[in-house]
Each structure stands twice: as C-alpha cells, then as structure tokens.
Length: 474
Image (tube, rainbow, N blue to C red; front, side, top):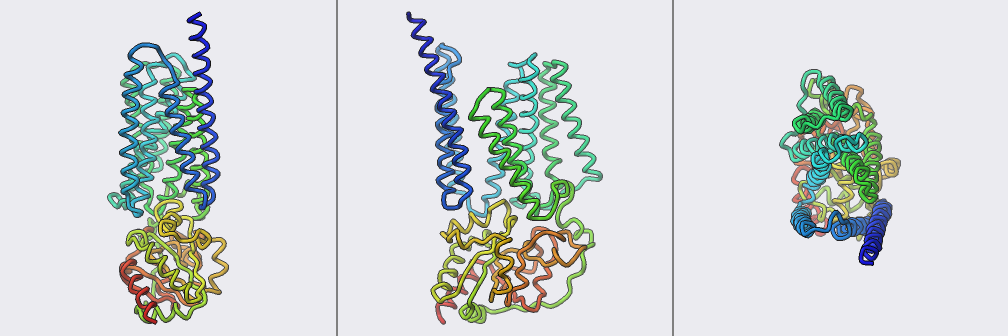
C-alpha cells in the first residue's frame, strides 16, 4: 500500500514538473511576442523572467533523482548558488551605465555559453557509449565554448581594450582549418567511444581558441552583428542541453534565443547591406586604414549656441539623430528636455533610428526610452528617410558612420552600399561632436564638409544643456 501511494505521488510530482515546464515555455513565447512592441516589452521581459523562475523552482523541488539525505544537500547547494548568481546579476544590471549596456549584454551572453560548455564537461563521462547523447554534448560543448570566448573578445572590443581588429596573415584559412578540425575531432570522439578526459579538455580548449580567433579579426563597427550571432550560438547550445536532458523548457528557451539571434543577425546584415561572410572575413575601416578611401576635401564651418537656438526656434520640423556619442555623454535626458521645449514652441520633433547605431541592436531605442521619449517619435530608417527633404533642421548627436553619404557616393569607401540615414537632404544639418575624429568604422565623414552642415563642437551633455538654456532665453 505504501509503495502504491509512493508511485502515485511520483506520477503526480512528475506531472507537476511537466506542467511547470509547459507554463515556463508558454511564458517565453508570449514574452518574446510582447517584446516586439516597445510599449509591452518591459512586461514581456518580466513575464519571461517569471516563467524562468518557475521552471528553476520546479526543477529544484519536483525533480527527484534519489531519496537519500544527499538530495537535500544537493538542493541546498544549488539554491545557494542560484541566490548568489541572482544577486550578482541583479546588482550588475542595476548599476551598469547605459553606455556600458552593450558590454553587459555581451558578458551575460558569454556566461550562457559557458554554462552550456560546463554541461558538456560534466555529462560526458555519464553518457559514454551513448552516441546520441554524446552528439548533443559535443555540439553544446563546442558551440557554448565558442560563444563564451567570442563574447569575451567582443566585450573587450566594446569597452575599447581591443578596439582595432587583429588580422593575422591568411586568417580566414586559419579559422576555416580550426573549424574543420573541431568538427572532425568531435566526430572522432563520438564514433570511437573515446573516454579520455584529456581529449575532452583538449577539445574544450580548442573550441575556446577558435572563439577567440573567430571574433578577434572583426572590426568594432560590426559588433552589433557579432553580438546577435553569438547570442544565437548560446541559444543553440542551450537547445542541445534541452535535447540531452529531455527538458522542454530548456529546449524551448534555447530555440527561441537561437532563432531570434539568427533573425536579428540577418536584419543587421541587411541594414549594412553586407553578407554575413563579409562581416566575418572583413571589417569596416580596413581599406581606409590601407589608404584606399578617396581623400576627403573641403572646409568645415561651426555654429555657436545662440545661432543654433534661433535656427531651431524658428523651424517647423526638427529631426534628431542619436548616436553612441549621446550615450557616452549620458545626454539622453537633456535631449528629451530639448525635444519638449521645441514642441512647446510648435516645432515638430522626431528621432531617426538607424538599425546599427550604437554598439548593439536597439541601443538607441533603449537609450531614449530611459529618458521617457515617446516610442512613437522613434522613427526607423526606412520610414524617415523620405521625409528628410521636408526637414528644416537635422541635429546629429554623436552619430557618424550611419549618416555618412560616402556609403552612397564613394565606391572606394569600406561602407559603400550600406543603407544610411539620408540627413544630407535636409535644409540645415547640425553635427554635434567633441572633435573631428573618425567614427567607429575608422573613416572620414564627407557630411561634415557639406555646405549645409555646421559643426556644433563639444561634449553632448554640456553642449545640449547650453542649447536648452539659450532656447529658454529667447
């Protein structure tokens, strides 16, 4: 009778566990759908987090492996680890500045890849002789390791520690050989039934090295694409873990992250009019560094804050183009104050958003949302480009390569063919920069020499604060 009750209890517990996983999977899907709209994105993110918390709690308390006293100790260790990790993650995300958000995303993504790799290292000896399970283990180990080390290099590039691409001679061939070697090595370990831990850790080290070589040559201007691609790698590695454990919520989450990252990578490549192969095997600014770019000739003119205030005050339509310089100066709140001030005076204000502006996909949208800019005023490139010829003033704040007309006019430019914000069609173009230094792609911007362009030099936050004060005095 007691064993009968125990059997019923186990069936009931398993049913609750599967139900929790189902609910978690559904929250992931609904949450991702909600994140497609800026107004519901925050709620979607929270919904997904609740689903993940439910799945973790269910795994801790409903998944039974044995009935010994050791089980309680295992649960205690796992719960303590989760608590420490949650605290570190929460504090890190809470304290990070908006300018450092791309680095944080890259680092968090790398941690996901590391987790997938650690699963492979842990489960290898438990599944010897099972070719199917070993296939999932090897795939998760290699892809997770590449995502981890690649994300660390991306992090170093984003924070400026490794800004310039390091390009070894014949590096595409080196990378290709490394990739083939990883695949062959993995297949050999599975087919031969190799149980040597030394071979396993050799594969792990080789995958880490490949991840470094994979990202190291890629230029900083391509980082939005690289972050999306590495994100898809982490999702794919997690999905293999889901196959290994027959865990539905892990599988669903991994597939969603992997597919979303892949689609975003395609969108980013389309936004730059480049193929993924050209991103991986050639970086923006390389030809410019070799002296192939056409020489930029002309003179520049600047504008003082009083004249700019008068110009904007009597305009009918103003378009603001935010860039990474706006994030560095933490001037998003000031730019919103400028927007409200202009609107009080009857000026129509909009924000032009380029898909790859900043250091990660959606960076400018997140930056402006932080200062409570209305989502409806953030206009995507395809929609706002036809309106620039009816715009009185375009204020470019910290953007560079995404407004460079050389992408349309100079075949020798490394960004030639990349869709840009066509701000050169506006009646007046104001560019706020701290200096005449080249942008992240490492090339000069011919927009600065346009007769309609005036340079408004200075730190974005300080310069815009002065502009707001000047407008208030009119």
